[in-house]
Length: 460
Image (cartoon, rainbow, N blue to C red):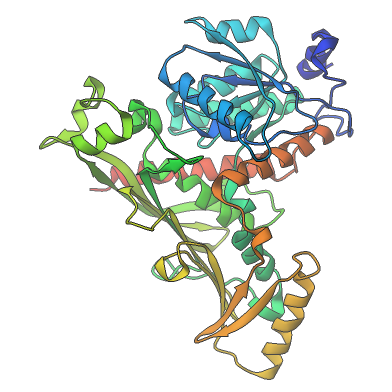
């Protein structure tokens, strides 16, 4: 009997959890009921898991935390979801605070899925302890930010597999319609051809994103935790947000294929650079009057230097890829976070742009030098096929190719994507297992970013 099964035999029936589902058996349990535990929520992503209600998640959520402003901010977001006019939720937060919050969670065993989003230095330890205690874990990215963290994560995945537990990270970008359709079109030889291999100077796949420290979340200015600016606690940019881009490269270029990081991936070059945060910007972002002591080592000429930016070139199963992330303090007026992506095929390139020209909304283009009737017919056939799944999908001619017209009902913002990931994880819990490729590919992407950090910090 697995730890997971033993756990379900021991919990109270009044918690509405009606059966176990082990990864070893793979048996589907449609009556599987989830009882969430939120552990030390230090990042707003923990609340976004609860932005909507779910039929098979109990409305009671047990929260264990040391207390303080981070917990207050988390509970305020949940309260906002419960009291909004449109589609309010019904969450009932059962909160425990105290220095022994982790020990209390372990001893009370109030749920079966631990949600983690917060201090990334602590997160890998939390993941390991929760899995070793028999809980499933749904974790915000990144699950590891250092080589030691990666080694612990690898051991944790092995323990989870042996004991029928599901450890999964929240990859929201897969749920963006432009990313989904870029992937779909890349699998259509008549439109895309086949993925090129590229070179280190001309990669076949490029993904870049721009983010901002100061922005609105759920309609209100986001207050960052002071540790968010410490790369030893949050992680450098090259191991943090970059994980989304590396995940998309794997997911789009090698769908359904289990990767082996020891033989399939090689980091060719990587670099990192800081974002300068002034005292006034730091105060706006954290509501603190000055930089705390642990950040003083990053202060130069009264300005905080945060190594939030990074880029890496690497080969993955012979395909050259480049990913890069940039953090600015605040977007220009009317601006927002942006995403750029290109996949180069032998017949066309699939390009996502999200700049001012696109009104900061992602737009997918099919760029081909082939204007023949044969190619146009192949494209029409492909779009008609995709329209069976994405009703209303169409293309329009632009100067250097075609723009994909995606009906607005398929376009999800960043916050809405959390619900899609949560639904996907619930399906896996009901099935009792993750897809066979997910765990090796999670390890592959964390290996990639952490190896990139090693290369970048070693480069003079």
